[in-house]
Length: 97
Image (cartoon, rainbow, N blue to C red; front, side, top):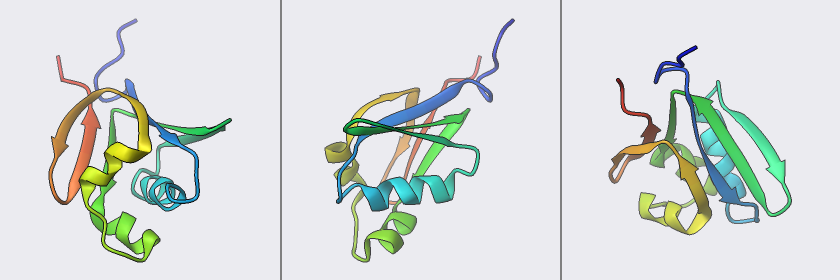
């Protein structure tokens, strides 16, 4: 059975700490199909097909300005391809066949 790029899970592993909790909450808010799994010291977030991190949503949760390059300090690893990374959004997805 072949899984399409739209259904194949992508995701990130994020360090679980006080400063990253608002980022995790923002990712959950912007990705309703995502599953969040809390593990010792990290949080794994995965979603079918695509995972989006929006700067504006993170800023709302943090209560301050946030630049997308700060995400590099939070992640442990990711699976999927980074399809977009600009000042407003990070998008992780698989290449379509």
